[in-house]
Length: 383
Ligand code: FES
Image (cartoon, rainbow, N blue to C red; front, top):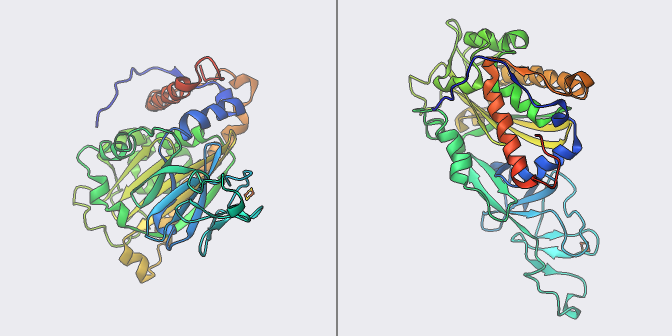
């Protein structure tokens, strides 16, 4: 891991408006979520041909589905006739095709227009040209990632590089076999806070001693406030009496076979920009996916993944789920307490980052650069 060197001084945070301004949020939707690879759905949730999910990516609704041949396709969730949102729900299963509820244009699972009332009387309608508009897809870590950009950035650098390079010698993807783990539990959180507050919170542990009594019991070094996510490339070690990453320190489930002795009894965490957190412990992996909905509203889906044999056995995973569920609730509560104060006149110029939070400053710079890249001179930016 390459650590950046910071001087031990206070540096300014973003101004409060960066968390409340709808104009800035729109710029982030356009310049970040609609330009980068975005982790949209879990592949296994599309378990048969015709199974579909929708995901909010920036300003767009994206329809992701399983084809007859077992592949994955993603489309803008917009009928090509007069623009009806094709699928209104979050998930479903189409028997043979997607049919628009307005005038019954019908698309196959590849997105091709295959039928429409009186289509034979409309020779100008090219069925390929008026098919659903495709979105770029990749499958990785057991999830479908989509990109709305015409020319997507390098998936290898932006997504794979973020997790594969981030942890030095730890081979997170291979050792934890993330793509082949099974879903043990999913909890969806409706957080009334800006997405950046959630990321910033995840990146530091200055707050851990104050709000995470259960987590600091399991990971005592988090109690000193310095074991920020950025600095735990070495893995935060379990406390002496702790048997597993569980709410009461009891033993967890079967260890993932690729996890070596050096990684046993350790916790690792990685952020994959813009909206994914990956937490690795010996017997499970926790993946958070954020869906920024508005300047003050973010939906977070959190998946707890275990060995398939653990999930199939029906073993009770509640003790391990409860630990991070409680951490999530504590974190999101803190973010929701920050959100209304971001609009206060006394926070107009923002606050300060203490030295252990300086990597959050790097995140702020990254956001500013991303927004600035496409909005220079035309849209409000964070500068
Ligand atoms: Fe979809 Fe008319 S808007 S068929």
